[in-house]
Image (cartoon, rainbow, N blue to C red; front, side, top):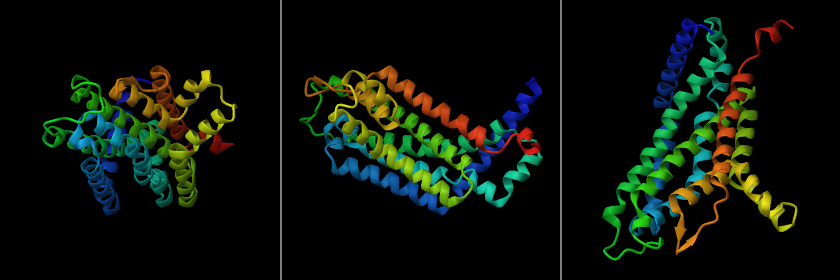
Length: 283
């Protein structure tokens, strides 16, 4: 691919991404869901021990909440991202302008990711800014000392939450690219969310209890689940020590590799399945 082609791909990608941002801004349902997410995060922080206890307790309060809510947000933002264009015929129109699959899928993903990741990151940072004002004079940190509860640890949690959001959204966009009906896309997206939130972890626990999953291989299996990998990275980098004891977080490098494989693999599937190659049509 020459330089001119790369420039065209970049321009097409940015054009599609801009269109996606405008679509999200004009969709009342997505705006309402975004507002509900922000209010819920602030409510959890206010009602829990986190806001008044320090950054580490706040991270622990929000960790499970993020694990559950982010997949649901990703479904709302992504399951019709490509399928909608296919249903209206806009996808066929874009193909007549010689838009590449990489430019189209990349633009759809970039636009949706900018909106969704901004929502998650800005909301979590906003909650974190309240900690100094809500913390009591006599802290109730779960961490062993005040230094272990620095704001840097919470920033790590926010960054990892943003990356986790990118991974789950990529998987949802892949479903939207691979399916052909709204009902099928929604069914697969819900199945993905259930598997991420409950299914994979439950299967690992059952396998470990039944002796099917060996303890020495548990770290590798945990890295295969985006939720478990995200949780492990948060516990190892943003929590670290609770009550003077190290937390069980699996292997950090394996967890990071697991998330990268899910992220890049999902985007590759989306590019592959968004429309058939010309050779396949002629055949």
